[in-house]
Amino acid sequence: MMLDLARLSAFPALMAFAAASDLFTMTISNRVSLALVACFLVLAPLTGMGINDILLHFGAGALVLVFAFACFARGWVGGGDAKLAAATALWFGFAHLLNYLLYASVFGGVLTIALLQLRQWPLPYPLTTQTWLLRLHAKESGIPYGIALAIGALMIYPDTDWVKAIDLAHIALR
Image (cartoon, rainbow, N blue to C red; front, top):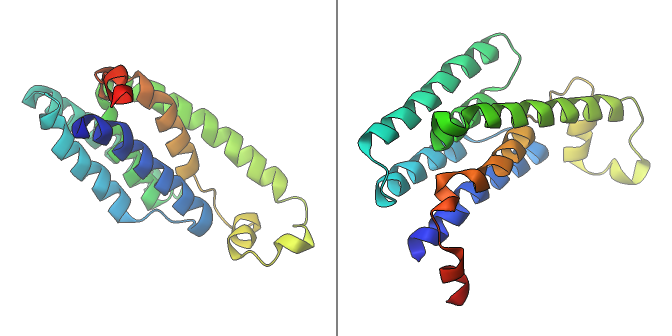
C-alpha cells in the first residue's frame, strides 16, 4: 500500500512543486529534477520495472535532455525547464513521451500568449505589492514554462503504468 501511495503522490507532488516554484520565483531548483530522478530510481525496480525498461526510460530522458539543452543554448528555454522536461521524460519513457511533449507544447503556447497579452495591460494597483506578480508581469521576464511542463505531465500521468497498475479500490478500502 505504501508503494502505491508513493506511486500516486511522488511524481504529481514534485510536478506541482516545480510549477509553483516557477510561477512564484521564475526558477526551478535542480533539487526538483534530482528528486524526480531519485524517486524514479527507487520506485522503478520496486514496482517491477525490468532493467531493459529502465534503460529505455533513461534513453527517453537523455534524448529530451539533449534536445532541451540545445533549446537552452539558443535561449529559448531556461535551464530548469530543460532539466525538468528531461526528468519528466525519464518517468514517461518513450511510450508516453510524444503525448507529453504535445501537451506541454500546447499548454506552453497558451501560457505564452496569455502572459504576453496580460503584459500589455497595467497591473491593477492592489496587486503591485506582490513581488512575484510584478516579476511575472514584467515585459522583460521570460515565460515560466515549468507550469506548462507540469500541467502536460499531470495530464499524461494517469494514463501511465505507474497509475494503471495500482488497485485504487484496495487503497480506498483501507
